[in-house]
Image 1 (tube, rainbow, N blue to C red):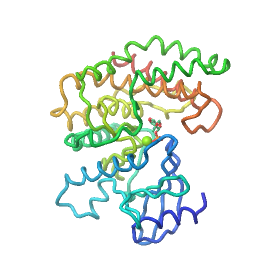
Image 2: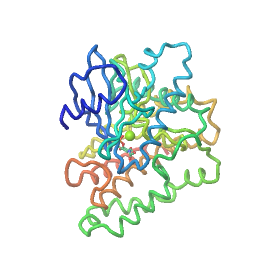
Image 3: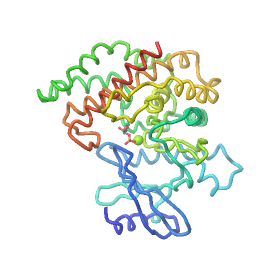
Image 4: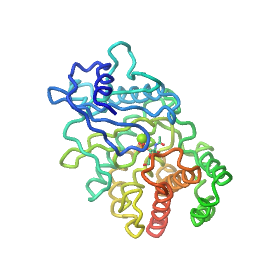
Length: 353
Ligand code: GN1
Ligand code: MG
């Protein structure tokens, strides 16, 4: 991407700052994300939203803006500028009331960068796990009075096991012999876990577990910390939509308790860290224990296992589909991600049963 192109797009937004330089942030699998340095020591995040995956970008941006406004309304006594460093804030375009700019079929949005903040790809101490649990708990608590029907389903059936399973079975039909052969061990594992992995789906369908506003991409790298490792806020609200809290809890656990990155190839490095689980759960429950039902609380561990399985299944499905969804760095990347997640399920099952 040329600096001039990014500068021109950035200048479509109402920020009163002058573009100085940019760098690309590479941790996401879907969107293109750039850190923009501007004059006056101001930083912004400029993001191109992948409209092949997110079919209704205006609806998605509306979800994000609505969620941020709701979160901000919880801090009536804090000045806007200070609040912009505590809650994700979106910038309007200069020439419209929209928070996205569309050019050549691409959609862009701008957020105010939260200064002196850090993210963790891998967790290295219990404090980060604990603070991460508090952050998600607080996010779910503060949005519990936001009517989830005000939000669109950004990706219909996103964490829906029946849908993910159907996608998987159809990928089995169309996959090449070579890929099916390489994935065989894992397709057998899927069959053995199938029934247990549909329990939450049933409870969601019967209404025993309620639908609330959920984040839906709670991997630990989507939590922002300050330099002392205290939690600031959850970021990447692209997938905020109605859902069940178990998958939010589970997706965080999936990444926090993995002793390696989600695409680590050396599976001996992939273990489930029970201490981090306990620390995360402690922080999470401190914030949510009074707002969640007994049934919701009872099924948190199964939420973790099911979410790891959903990701294993999605990576495996994409591998069988010749890598059409996730960005990959090399041939077999998606299969390595799937293997990694299956190893994590094995370790989880040995430690929590
Ligand atoms: C994708 O692009 P990113 O990293 O925010 C995916 C999540 C997965 C994650 C796996 C819309 O998120 O569901 O958990 O990769 N987002 C979408 O790292 O599919
Ligand atoms: Mg995301």
